[in-house]
Image (tube, rainbow, N blue to C red; front, side, top):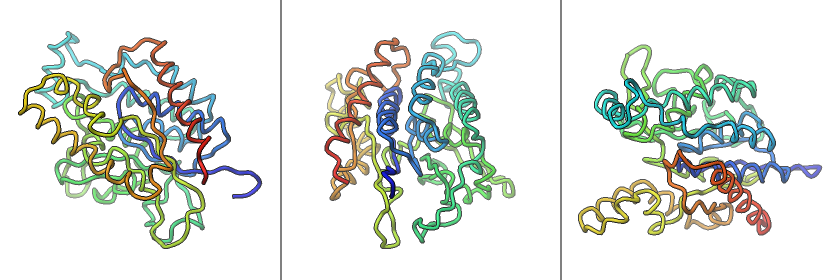
Length: 323
């Protein structure tokens, strides 16, 4: 890096409404002059990551977050009656809510930034990791889970597994795949156009909620710039109350064990990776206490507070960053 240029790749953790905190952290980094050659995200983190990859600025990102109507994200299907519609969705399409509104919103916001398909996010960097395959040369990666094949998907990197051309795929579709909270949103599908074999796709957080190592070089050369990670779910056991609030309050041994097994499956790999040398040093944690993952009815004051917590966490991180 020259002439005072500041670059960093960024990886954003999933966590529902708490993602406002991730957006706040990114806003603070942008205000400090950072640019992001690549961004990755899981679930809600995929939204901000897509906007970052599209080249959003600090002021633009704040405006986009202000335009996000959280109350519309849980979009009921007909007949639109609380509980009845959710039940119809769960039994009919395996998701209480459609997830259509948030996908359309993402597509519209990206279009304003000049991004539609992954072809718009292509990057050919001669100094990049020599081990990168052609399908990995994009500014954005979002994580999703293929429950049919039982594997993690890194989109657009893994579209080839379905006989799909990465550059032709809609960025909004990939983000929607990553957002597919099991049973909350209708799952997505990826289908091979030749064999017609199809996979059910759900939230990437099932297998990797915080892939902070996704951009680490594998060719033995030193990284030209750091990868910053933004977390919005605290470590276990404290984080259990954020992922399973009902089970955390009901002290019944079988239920307690079940939620411990599920939450460990969700975040255990990521939490273990944080213990590797230097990983926590490049990671900022946003305090989102009091905000639930599906707390889509929070008021404007609470929204602003979460964003500001993200800005605060990033500011404190920059104050101690020695990279």
